[in-house]
Length: 211
Image 1 (cartoon, rainbow, N blue to C red):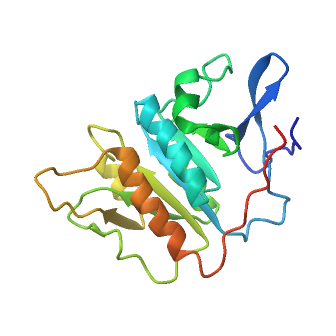
Image 2: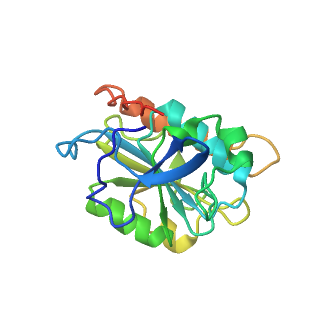
């Protein structure tokens, strides 16, 4: 069982996986917030129409390791559960339990996700090659308390209209013949850099749910 609290701040609730006897279900939950947490440091991963279950599961595992507080799944991005709320074995095989501890929520579009995050005070970063992008190491020395990192689909990346809404556009310099990295690999590089920049004021450790 988990210590449930209503996700009162979201129209699209956060979810974690809860194990019941003989079944797997997902429930709206805020496992580590207590109502006075809006000033806490937070890192959110925003996945824009990523199609591969393997990539999304890998991002969950990396986000958990880097100390992210939530994952926002936009568009067709697959989640840890199917439409009946059952755990997806192929997802769990890659995420290795991160889907059971890292809260996530669905948004119909990345635009709605950005609007919601901005209302919560997030600084929005897009990881995409652009004329206005800078190397991922060129982040400000002191980062905002709330950061949202957006990564796009495997083939098209982040759409230009979404990139324009970002506060900062980052790219990972490529030294070889290939122009880009796998999305889960690219996310990992940028995610740990964002977390590192917040390290001066330590990120709050999530209270593990009793699952």
